[in-house]
Length: 107
Image 1 (cartoon, rainbow, N blue to C red):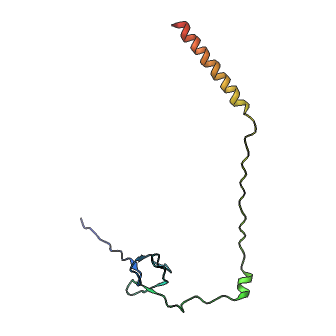
Image 2: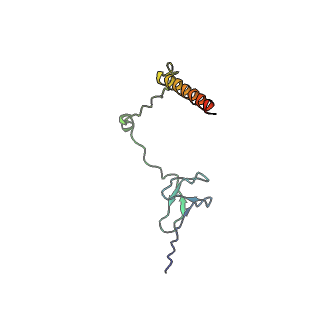
Image 3: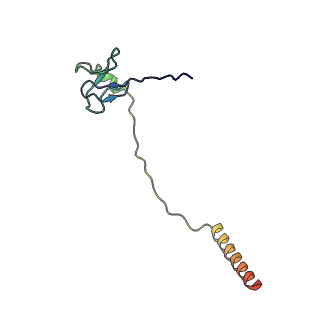
């Protein structure tokens, strides 16, 4: 039986050395911006000028806005007692009394 071992190399932040998930833009430990170095597997601090280009004002204006409506939850008290519950309760009480009387009679 041959045992195969797989080594998973975790990327780490260049600034603080903390392990960072692949594809992360920021280090979860120190908060620095990081970028993946493909040859060494280490994450390097991204240069400050590596920001994505800004969108034009027209593109921002034409972007669909998400409207978040607040969710309103209203609690309403139950309206009356269900008739089936009352009828079944009365029947069970009568059955229990009948069984008790039979048990006392047969004693």
